[in-house]
Amino acid sequence: LTKDKLDKLDLELIMEKITVFVDHLEIKLKSDVDMLLSSTTIEDTANFPHDTGDISQITQSSTNRLDKVFRVNVISSGDPLEIYTDKDGEVIFKKYSPMGELSSFATQICETLHKTSGYPVAVTDRDLVIAAAGAPRRDLVDKRVGEELEKIMESRQLYSFKEGDKKIHVSDGVDKYFVELAAPIIAEGDVSGCVLFIAGDAPTPLSETEQKLAATVAGFLGKQMES
Image 1 (cartoon, helix red, strand yellow):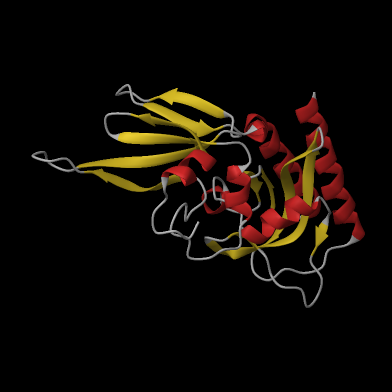
Image 2 (cartoon, helix red, strand yellow):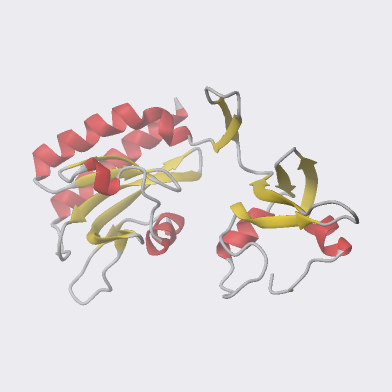
């Protein structure tokens, strides 16, 4: 990951296929390589510095021809993709999120939880906040979940803030929302997201009632996904 350049052996080890388009390249990674990239603690990596996605550009140089720059998009072989076309006919690949199919339902759940508890509430998938209530949608919805919140989901355990704990941002790019409760959503043995109770300023310990409520809703959403 820290090499200045990848040699042929490196490429064969990590890449399944490279597809060349007129203006960009798509690199499909081999199975489990994306997991390695997302879980590594190595900093200042020269290659794949931002997980997968648009990672850089490659310039093709040829004698007696102008240099041509290709945008590089990396796709994990383990990522299901949704395919869209825009009005100009461009094909767009988006990472598929099973939780995303429940976004309307999750929004209703958030509104009900907010009215019941009085706290801002959100539901996420593995990558993004997909629904929220009690806080402006533009502040949270479609924002990428923070690194510490990802670790909570991977733990598969209910998280409840306690006095003296480090404050955890809902999203690393949004400074004013913190996690008070987080209940991972498990569907068919896999983590699919989480249910959050949120603090708009400083998090405070919540009661057992809110903890059970978050866990119950997370369990319910997991069952909905399985059905």
